Image 1 (tube, rainbow, N blue to C red):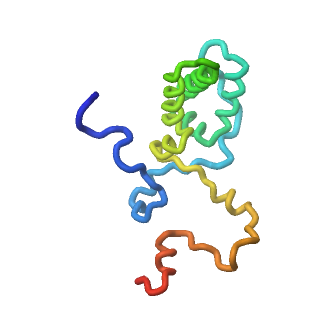
Image 2: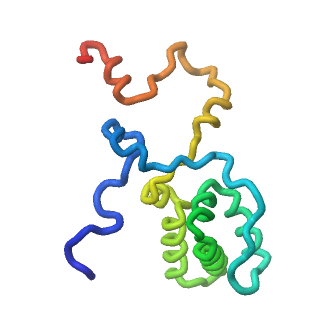
Image 3: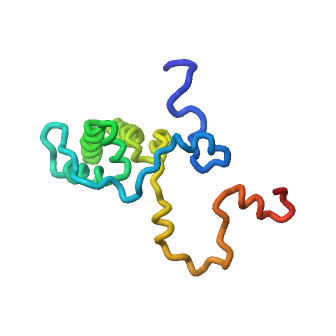
Length: 157
């Protein structure tokens, strides 16, 4: 095991909603919630199974697929699909599940992977389309932590 130096996941995960993150807000890529549009790329590996085909088609509709397309990661995505299918089989080695998790992180399919890649899915359009809950009080909650702090009686601000 290497000693010293920075590690991939050392330190706290970046938080795009943190109060003091305005300085690096431009480093985050906002992906559209509707996902990638268009035809699914051809399968880059040898002989695709039916299950791999279904997962492949679903995968390329996700918002993250826009970035895979930009960076030419079709082979990495196909390896993820192939290993996922293998890990689904009864009695598959645990090491395959570990590999699938690592691949999902690197492709931004998991929450930690999205943070590590500094990708966010634009959910604002979805929030606007949802109907308001009838159980809410007349006053809506403030959008930021800073606004909530100012709303405290006797607080500075």
